[in-house]
Amino acid sequence: MSPYSWLPYGQHKLDEEDVAAVKSSLRAEYLTCGPRVKEFELAFAEAAGAKNAVACNSGTAALHLAAMALDLGPGDAAIVPTITFVATANAVRMTGAEVVFADVEPDTGLMNATTFMAACERAAGAGYKLKAAIPVHLNGQVCDMPALGVAAAREGVPLIEDACHALGVPSVGQARHSRMATFSTHPVKAIATGEGGCVTTSDDEIDARLRRLRSHGITREPREFQNPTLAFEGDAVNPYHYEMLELGWNYRMPDILCALGISQLKKLERFCQRRREIASRYDELLASLAPVIKPVPHGTRGHAWHLYAILVDFGDLGLTRRQFGEALGAKGIGTAVHYIPVHRQPYYQQRYGEIRLPGAEAYFARCLSLPIFPSLTDDGVNRVTAAITEIVRNLR
Picture 1 (tube, helix red, strand yellow):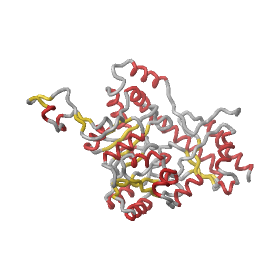
Picture 2 (cartoon, helix red, strand yellow):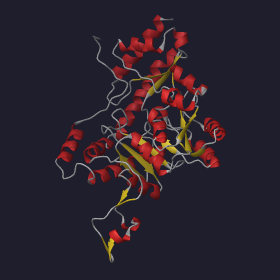
Picture 3 (tube, one colour):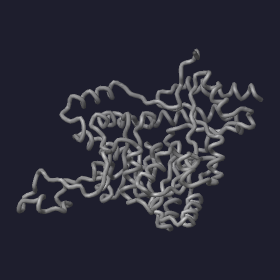
Picture 4 (tube, helix red, strand yellow):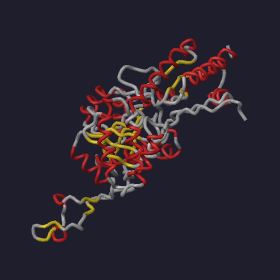
């Protein structure tokens, strides 16, 4: 057993206010579909700088709802950067549409306008009808959305931002260059609700459709009813009537989790500030190890610091990533890889064959995520960087 306390790569932070909020919800009239859902949505929209926010039960559900709201289906396709969690691509396939994988920048892992256009060309060559593209704000770093927005508009392709790493960057939730932005409230994200997610949009029609799709495709709005015989008795609305207008899903978020989310949102800026402080400290303490080890370039477009990722020249170091990670693990330091390129997953290889995406391969070969979370202390950061420095200097 390691003599060191364990530092995971990510961890939620809860306090007694969060516990009290959940207890209060458990004693309330509603466990689900109650007033805390709307309260959470309003608080989330305010925190994200959004006009509308639609809560759902996971970040994956948020992506799927967004894809359905753009009517993706069989015969369509969407562009997805290959450096992301599989859920981004899976949400497209869940509609029956095909995935066109885009390459990324080798040092940041982000899709840009150039790799987007290259994916558009491959989609055209395959005869696909492009219906959407989903830029991913990897690690919390914001993509160049103005440039992507211009390129996407030129191609007639609406954008959905996968912002599951980027809550806390105001420009992201506003979705200025996209139709929607999707978020996750998984325990290692900016705020935690256990499981959960949100979609933000400035489009009121999309907002209404998202709400319908998350609840079986059912509406109780009289103006949307299509069966007047059952819906109305003269001028009176039948209070028991509802209509399923399309195929939807049960993606609702319960009041219990919304209560936790409301409490967590009150601490969002504090959490984000601590993540910024940790990132700055890592930058300072790892600077002497360049170029063998260097941080993923931060850019200037905004960063939520969901992850602190480094690029490691494992060949120069003389260790494999597994060996490097095990050496840190022996000192009680957790690391992770975000992510294995999705186009290399067996399901997608079998569906689309071998694809060459050199930027993604270069990023994947070097990336490693270090511990970063609000309760990580300066001593913890010192411990991580000291361990890395010791490993590197013992091999030089």
